[in-house]
Amino acid sequence: MLVSFSNFSKQYSLSFYWSSLTLTTSGQQPYPTAAMHNSLEIFDTIVGVLVFAVIVGSVGNVVSTMNIGRAEIQQLNDGIKFYMKYRNVSATMQKRVLDCINYIQRHAQIQDEGVAVLGTIPPRLRGELAVHLHLENLRRIELFTECEPSLLYELVIRFTMKMFAPNDFLCRSGDLAKDMFVLKRGTLDILSDNGEHYSRLTQGGIFGEMAILKPLGPLGKLLARRRYSLRSVGYSEVYLLSQEDALDVFSDYPEQRNELIRKATSLLLENNEIHLEDLAEKTKFNPFELSGTESVNEIFQLLKETLDTLDKELDTVYVKFAGSSSSLKKQVTKLEGLYLENRQLLKNTFLRTTKNIKQI
Image 1 (cartoon, one colour):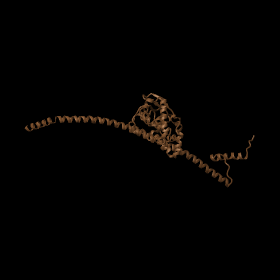
Image 2: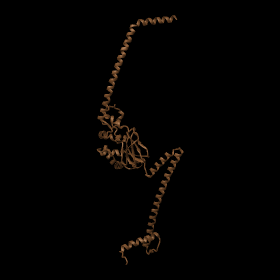
Image 3: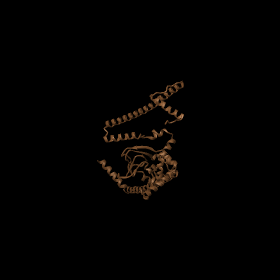
Image 4: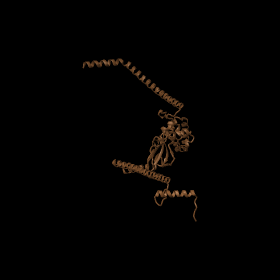
């Protein structure tokens, strides 16, 4: 039974058949019988050759680029290996360095995203990208749940990325607390003072959010140092927000900062990480603790407290000086009385001594 086709389907099928024969140059092809046929065949052949040349050229270019990239990477590896052997670097350290390089190459890691990638796009678009990456992580932190969106926006655009190798310490217990960490990829271990495992951070985890507030007074001293160490388990990529950048943002949001400090105090008390006795401790004001985020009223209050302290210390010094001067005055008066009582005796002794010297 013969299958019937419509005129259009037959023409469409035959066009594919004719194109295949033309491309492969195999089989009997119908010869052109008119000038239009010749023109169409020439045009079709030229287009086919161009398309084939473009495809082959593109594939060749990709392969050449890959070969160049591999050659550069291999040259870099050889240079590093030669340098480490020339400097007599230990085998363990050589392995760590080469493993780190392989990790960077495998993940196409860029060490400074802000300069290499984000620096090439407009600031507003860069900010929107940073918000997309980090804003949800910040909102999950109990400390920042009620913050203004504009404050969170200003914070997230100041994140910078760093990479850490296995067993690298991001911070140690007792170090100055100056950064907040947001884990992008990898695993981080939180260790206690004696090195015991306390907790573990996975992707999206945050550590050290209290450090960026830098409160004054007893709370500031309690939060000034790390109470836990942070160590990378494997290769980890971490976003950092420095205290300096955060305080620069808080200078435009002093009320929000004060609210965050009050909330941080409440959270620390609820978790029994600090006690009311610690906050009640009176400490002398240190002007170097000023972060630049204080309001005018706060600065005047701090100045008043400082002047009161200076006034009390001056009173103490004056009382001591008055007592010392009174005692000294009495001693001088007593010495004068002794001199007046024994003046004639001293004069006779002096004359007798002088006469004896002349006789000698």
